[in-house]
Length: 31
Image (cartoon, rainbow, N blue to C red; front, side):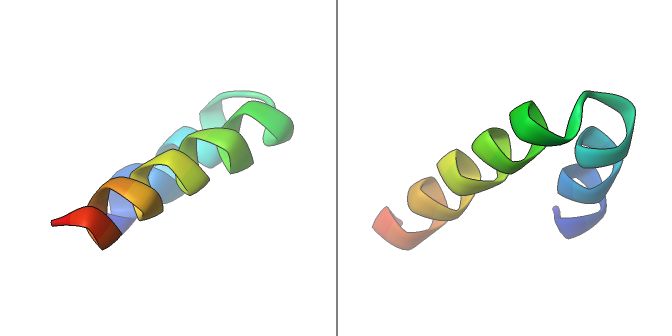
């Protein structure tokens, strides 16, 4: 799961990567 976040952060522009990472962290926090 973390590797997916890291890959997304590197492949897409950094700002969108950070935004996506925050969303995933929030989703994990809710579970």
